[in-house]
Amino acid sequence: MSTSDRRYDIDWLRVIAIGLLLFYHIGIGFQPWGVFIGFIQSEKPLESLWIIMSMLNIWRIPLLFFVSGMGVCFAIRKRNWKQLIIERTKRILLPFLFGILIIVPIHVFIWQKYYNQDITYTLHPVHVWFLANIFIYVVLLSPLFFYLKRNESGKINKWLKNLFGNPLGLLFVAAIFVLEAVLVKPETYETYSMTLHGFLLGLLAFLFGFCFVLSGDGFWQTVRRWRWLFLSIAGILFAVRYIVFDLQAPNYYKAIESNMWIFALFGIGYRYLNHPSKALSYLSQGAYPIYIIHMIFLYLGSSLIMPLGIPTLVKFILVVVFTTIGCFTLYELIIKRAGFLRPLFGLKQSEV
Image: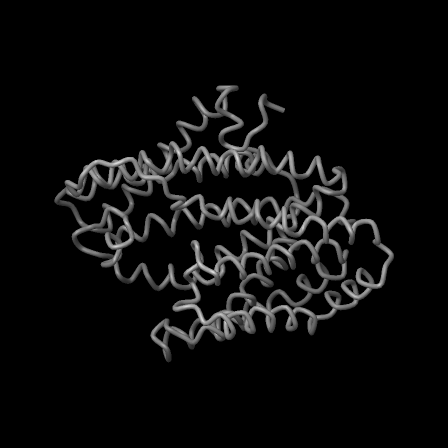
């Protein structure tokens, strides 16, 4: 399959990555430390949920940055540098600014009210921080990206094709992430938001995502062919991390496991998800707007449900349902249909 065709598997992986971010944020409210990082916390935790969250946590954000870099590689096939920056400013920077000015203060207000804190207007990126990172990566790396685009038959592109057409090339990629973890020495590998580690890891993932697409079919055939091996290695590494390290493995170890999960997902997605569907068409457009607003409904639902005298698992299910229904309802009835709101959530001015 030519990589010039629409890649539905990449669209699906973007939707999946954003969906996992929602699940993870809901889960934080059911951990014994949730309130310390600004979440409305259940009186009784669901600590077993942390096993799943810990497995997801080392690859959910990196996957999003890989996919975002891939998206830029497809975008520049039909855009020059100026068009790319203008388009990304509208789609990423504007929603980021709207998020920190309007959306974040709303859910922070709900938290302050719930915990009887002083009510203050708070300017903070909170959950939209990654949008700023993506925009910075576009600005920083676009000169390199357009150079590579102009020299598609050059030595660098030929080297990339050979490198990523071989599974050993993917081990090279994993080694770069290991090196970053060793040199930067983050307190925890999963601390991505507004840290040097998170910025550099995202930058590397964004760059490699672009290069994977640029290199052509070789990369996709490699991850497709070896997908079950990557998945098996990832599963084994997680099992060892759970049993031996009690989920707290060294950062270099987590970097390897993270990449194995991501390579496996790219291979599985390429093999099974690369086809159109009505669900994908809807979710692909709605993913970013829903992510931007989800914290409002998460906090509102938590403030209503957490005090109830019902089993903790039922609370978790109700918060998931409340957040999901609230987000999709607001998106479908207002955001999607209000022309003046659409650009604030990264959507085009009118329906396509």
